[in-house]
Image 1 (cartoon, rainbow, N blue to C red):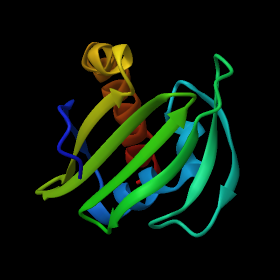
Image 2: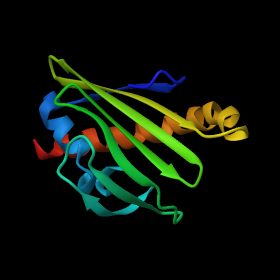
Image 3: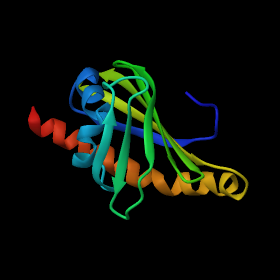
Image 4: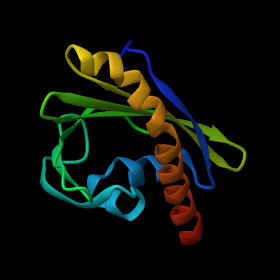
Amino acid sequence: MSTLRTVGGTVAFPVPAEVAFDYLVDPVNRPQWQSSLASVTDVRGEVGPGQTWTDVTKPGLRPAMRTTAYDRPRAWSEDGTWKFVTAILDLTFTPTATGCDVGFRFRITGPGPVRALGLLASAASVLPVRADLRTAARILGERG
């Protein structure tokens, strides 16, 4: 996990940590719950450290993504790079009596002025990231 300043929160999932982990970290599932994605392409490698893929966003951006940390079912991280901007997402999975809590930390960074604006852009992303994780929790909850 990185030491850059991050923003984030926690979302309760009604399923065990292993179930939430396996669903969230597989890029093939991402368009089901991540509102900004139209699709995922170019998936290379097995789900795990070093796996890469391309997010195809609804606005048309195509960041190159990769898994940077994979500790099933406790922690997972990715980074995505588009031009000179990098977005980093860390997820942690904590068992609870009713399923698990998924903690998320998010940050956007880049060179020069992008670095200065990164924390503001990251803060603006907290609500959409939380909403996407709530969608994933709902989908998994409906599956039973």
